[in-house]
Length: 97
Image (cartoon, rainbow, N blue to C red):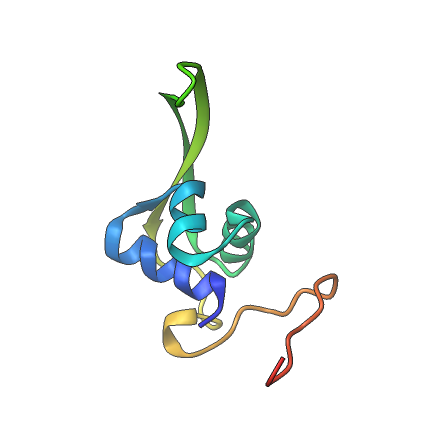
C-alpha cells in the first residue's frame, strides 16, 4: 500500500489524522503532501488547527485532517483499486528496491 492509501484508510477508519500519527503509524514524514495528493484525486479533506503544550511547556500548533466525504468525481478511487496519479517530481520505486 502507498502512503496515500494508508492515510485514506486511516481517515476512513478513525475519522482524523495528525502529522504525529502519520509519522508514528506509517512512517510518513510529509502528511501535508499526501493530503494534497488525496485532494487532487477528488477527496474532500478539511484541516483544523489545534494547540497543545509540548514537553517543554510551550504551546505548539499542529494540523488535524478529516475526511468529510468520499470523492466528488468518478474514477481514480483508491478504494476501488485505482492508483493516484504519479508525481513527475518524485522518483518512483521499482520492485526489489
